[in-house]
Length: 315
Image (cartoon, rainbow, N blue to C red; front, side, top):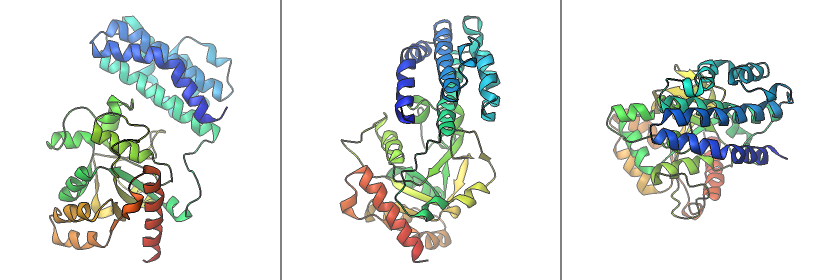
């Protein structure tokens, strides 16, 4: 069984208690939420330990003990001690349902991500220019890109809410089961030929997770940065899950280039740039995708990756 199949099997095994915990949290019922969340967290940790070959440790019933065993294989589990205490308390816990579910999300996310790392799994689909490995990217909707250019920076979800730019819940926390803390960061990811970032951008636009993007697909605006530049920024967090998280904001001054799905979207974004000097710098960094590649997320990602490589070669 390859890792993707293993991951899908694991999520199917945990689906019932996860849904029960989420439903109880929606109802504000901590008493029902806690045991369901603990059951799911135990399953995820056991699956991680099984994946790394520690089947003896995978038989325990204490999340704290399983977490200690997991930390012996992967240091990133050390930071989840508070989550373990919260879920081990189960029905006796005085934690809110929101805190209980968030503890489950942290453990779920860590167990799955680090099992993938242990197995050598990579979303890198290969078959593209190695120069792209020196870059990272953030994909967003045209509407949000216009706002980003107007403010001169990418803001985290929570910063957007504080500034009156967004409302509601972050799509990641609500549907993708990201922990709440992720809303304090701007996330950037590796540049590959896989179209995960298109899923996220379209899910933000639609308000639900659209896995296949078979209907009403709209290409994202793709913002590219040099990996070494992002690594040098203050507020960078290494959580063992995401490639890069930058706390609160990421300035467009660090932008290497951007790909827009249309000339209209490009012009609308550039017109909103406040500082003339910044506008002049950004004009040369904004590329427009060819119309024929904009109908399918896979074609869009592959074609725009090639455009970025060509743009780099001209500099």
